[in-house]
Structures are given as structure tokens and as C-alpha cells.
Amino acid sequence: MLPALPLDEAGKYVAGAYLIFLALLFVYVAIMASKLSKIEREVVEISQLVENRSQPAEADARVKEPVG
Amino acid sequence: MLVFFYAPLDADQGFVQKIFYLHVPMAIVALCGFVAGGAMGIMHLRTRDQSWDLRSYVTIHISVILAVGVLVTGSIWARASWGHWWVWDEPMLVSFLIVFLLYATYWPLRFSIEDKEKQSRYASVFAIVAGAFVPLNFAAVRMAEQFTHPQTGATVGGGMPPKFALTFAVAFIGMTCLFVTLCKYEMASKHATFRLRALKRKLAGDDDALAVGSRSAAPQL
Image 1 (cartoon, one colour):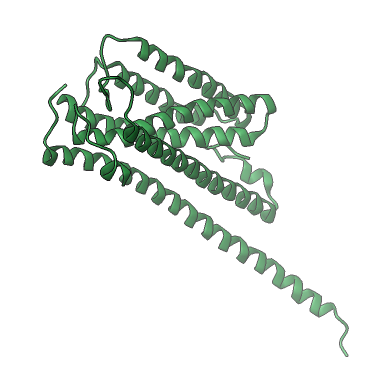
Image 2 (cartoon, chains in turn blue, green):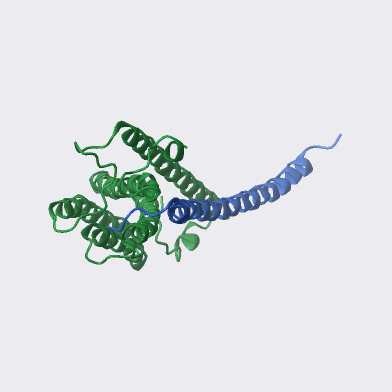
């Protein structure tokens, strides 16, 4: 084993290790965030599909109601 | 904060030893995650409940991500302590790399099997076998005393001084909490995706058409 590095040199390695860990975490969270935004888009898509389906059904019900 | 302002400097390694509080808890949590993935694989094979396969998949996924962190931070620590980024005759490093490479084959294995039932069954068998290999591998490395991994917190009487031990315990608990949180986060995301897909199929009224061709390495509920 090498003798202990001076603080200014050891600091680079320690900072590098902790920053890499944070970067790894950040990349994971960013990927998950993109997946969540995809889920959100799909929710919007489905809610539009449900709305489109319910609108003709409501219109049909209004037509069938007796007038006067 | 404890790592930098509470824990004293190591007598042998000095400031570089601060990597220990990140590297070692991450390695322990990753290895425990692999073993937990195997235990979940057993639960899947016993109950045939697909949610256990999903849990096993997510646990192994997060453990592999942590294992990447372990390899990188370990490499940085090796460079600072030994003057080399990688030492091939160090059993701890090589054995961890073997475990990592073993688990790197988990996704190709899943993806190579089209039938979902078969895929989850084979993946569970893999998780159990690989999960059993992890502690065996660790024990084998411990028994190999020819070379030594950098020891930290060494005192004349042996053992870890209280300040080191407390900082390490806090770091370990923090890493465990992070692991559990990430697992829960990914599980929630996967559940939401499955429910949305099911809802889409229901609305489209075309179950079979959407079920065919959805080849994926991720388990399906």
C-alpha cells in the first residue's frame, strides 16, 4: 500500500468517488422521470379516449329523450 | 456530514479513507440485494405469483446499478491507495467483478425467452442460483488470506473505533434506505405502466392483438 496521500491530492479522489455516485443516482432518476412522463402522456391519451367514447353516448341519450 | 466532519482521519490512509463510507455500504447493500432477489425468486417459484418475479427483477436491477457504483468507487480508491485503477490479483475486486458480470447476463437471459411464464420461471432459477453464489463467493474471498484488501479504521487493539463505527452505521442505514426507496419507486412505476397497459387493452377491446409482440425483459403482471 502507498503512503497516505496529502489532502489536496486525496481530495480529488474522494470528490470524484462521491460525484460519480451522485451522477449515477442522477442518471437513474432522470431515466425514471422520463418513464413517468411517458406514463403521464398515456394517462392523457386514455382520458381523451374515454371522453371521446362518452360524448357520442351522451348525445345518443339526448336524442332518445322525448321532446316536450 | 458525519463522514467529513465527525469521523476522524484514518491513521494509514488519511483522507482517502472517506471513500470507505460510500464504497463499503454500497457493496454490502448491493450484495444483500442480490441475495434478496434470490429469496424473492424462491417465493415466485413457490407461489407462482408474478409480483414476486417483479420484486426480484427490480431488486436485482437496483443492485446492479449499485454494483456499477461499487466498481467505479472501488477503482478510484484502488488508484489512491495502491497507485493502480485495477489490481487483477486482488480477490475482493475480481470476485465482485465476477458477481457483477454474472448479474449482467440476467437481462439477456430474460430477453431471450419469449414465453412470459417460462421467462419468469427461468429468471427466478437464475436469481436463486446466482443469489446463493454471492455469499459463497464472499466466504471464499474471506478465506483467501494471501492478499489483503485495504483495511480501514485499524487500531492497535483491532476493531473499529466508535466514531468510525457510528459513521459507518449511519452510512449503511442511509444506503439501505436509498436502496429501498429506489426499489419502491421503480415498483410504483412498473405497476402504473402495467395498469395503464391493461386499461388501454380494455378500452381498445382488443386484448390478443396488443398482447402479441410485447417482447420485453421486464416481467409482466
